Amino acid sequence: MRAGIVLFPGTNRERDMAIALAKVSGGREPVMIWHKETSLPPLDLIVLPGGFSHGDYLRCGAMAAQSPVMRAVRDFAEAGGHVLGVCNGFQILTEAGMLPGALLRNAGLRFLGQDHSMRVEQTDSIYTSGYAQGQIIRVVLAHGDGNYFADTATLDRLEGEGQVAFRYASPSGEVSDATNPNGSQRGIAGIISANRRVLGLMPHPEDYVDPLMGGEDGLPMFAGIVQGLAA
Image 1 (cartoon, rainbow, N blue to C red):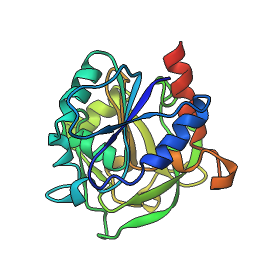
Image 2 (tube, rainbow, N blue to C red; image 1 turned 90 degrees about the vertical axis):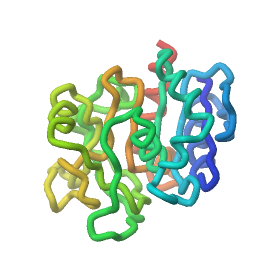
Image 3 (cartoon, rainbow, N blue to C red; image 1 turned 45 degrees about the vertical axis):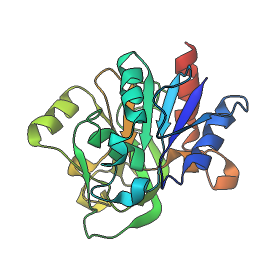
Image 4 (cartoon, rainbow, N blue to C red; image 1 turned 120 degrees about the horizontal axis):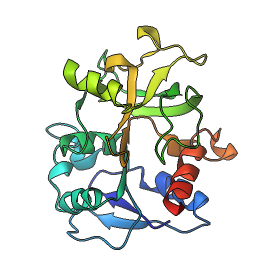
């Protein structure tokens, strides 16, 4: 798998993501792509990792969405490429119009840095094929603006077309206000594009890909990406 990780000023999760991608790619390191690049090398996957691009000025991801590289990322996706956005990457994807909705300040206006449970809602994409539908996985939260918002019509469309990929849940799989750490509508933790090629999620699966990290619940996502791209 040929993967590229886009770096913006303020990105700080690129090394974690690189470890996860190399682990499932036989040690092949992803290419690091600076945000001022206007063309991309041959790639199978582009990742927009977590961090605080441009210091989160204006709105989180708003300035990064206007970076020169994003035109190439959009072209890549429109040509059939796969794009993964995690945390700040999810914010950038919504600001760039590549995924619907927006990420608002967390309910309670507090930064969340903690483990949480997440329920897998669909398995018909390379990102989720390594899981079972309804499976509960443990992930890491590290965000201050992870409150997913969209209008009712958009939410209904996401539900109807199976584009809700993950929801915040209890360890036993219950979804309720009590299991929703940041106020996201309908407990949404991640969504996927209608063509199943662009995924955005707030939690960090790359933080759990090795027992030395405390768990491997994120590993099936990255293994599924490699298997899906090789198919």
